[in-house]
Length: 370
Image (cartoon, rainbow, N blue to C red; front, side):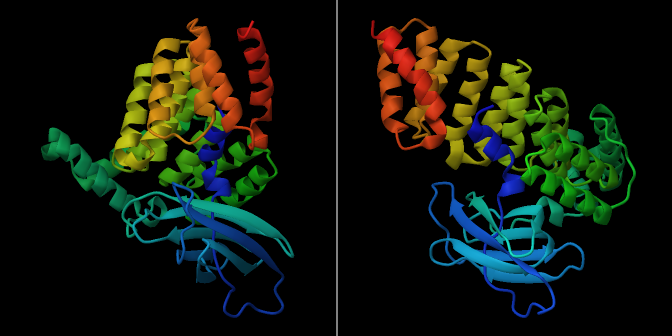
């Protein structure tokens, strides 16, 4: 999994807030700062985005807006917060379990996708609403006569039990409040890069309240990071099912990554196409993701075709050029590969995170130039 994959997969932990000063924080409470940056998918700052921070312990709520540069510093009493961001012509975004520590500054970033700004986020929907959505989805497939909200609730929870069993999650049914406590600890572990510990706490959070698709997605991301693609796929499918078979594009794209890791290339490609339908502005990203799946399975001809398509769709990361060059090299197309490796060196020269790629590429260029 590339660093971009992982960064995207963990957006629920690091992607967040934006904003201003709390109107009247009590002087007796220690405070910390969240430094927010809000942008769109083209990395253009979003001004005047509405931000809401809710402290889990007491529902204390602070609202603010991003400034003209898409930035905002939100000074908050210490505690664990849920954050929601909305902006015109963009789908809203949300993350939970953000820990504010005394006298510290924590940077967070939101990338908002095009869509309906009034869309309800998964955590804002009740299980009954999710059941209604699932009933409508099934009815559209010709099952209307046998589907009601009540039967879907029963079926959904039966499905959740199967998912919990597959992912070794113990159902304790403590409810949303208990889930929030476990999620807060998980986010703190995640910030300290203790991925195994964070996964354990997220599984406990799901045991308390398994009705939130975002929680299943988060757990699936960490399974994927632990190279457990089977449980990850179960989590992603459960998140999609709880959204009536739809949900966010990122749910489908991560299911595609899990299936690709299992060698199910047809299934992975189908998921990435579904993500592109839900999020057409990022078709280049999903094409690149599909190319990675085929390249990892050593299907280099198909991978080369898809890397080239992602580049033609203006995929902006130099990794696509590197992947294209590598696929061409594996196909024995030496001169084309050499040209692409040189292009990668030019495009990546100012990116310190690609230093390892450049070192490898220099060796490849020297070898292919002989």
